[in-house]
Image (cartoon, rainbow, N blue to C red; front, side, top):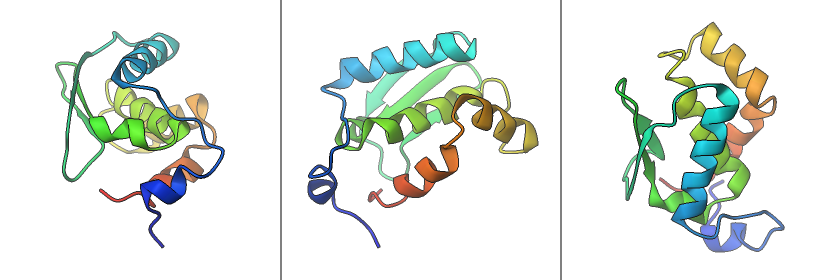
Amino acid sequence: MKTSLALAKKTTETYWDDAEALRWAVRHWAVKIGVKAPNLHLRPMKNKWASISTKGRLTLDVGLVEIPQKLGEYVIVHELLHLIAPNHGKVFKSFLFAYMPDWEQREIQLQQFLR
């Protein structure tokens, strides 16, 4: 079952105030993970929440400010970890578990939001 943004915002979830808060979260997680903070771009994206290039350009969907913060953090951590582990193999998943032990739950919750 897909959840609308309006319904989701009726919960007690925490949301980012604006795009600058997203920028702060990217810097925070880059330091925590130990990677160079990427060149960040915010824009509307039709089919995904984010992408990152091998050259360190992180593009985030501006719609991340409309979903719960913990889900946006999952998107950010997921993309930053691709700077260490380029695919979704065992190494990548071990990093996900290390930095965000509940990542599987967050990934499932994220799928409830329309993309």
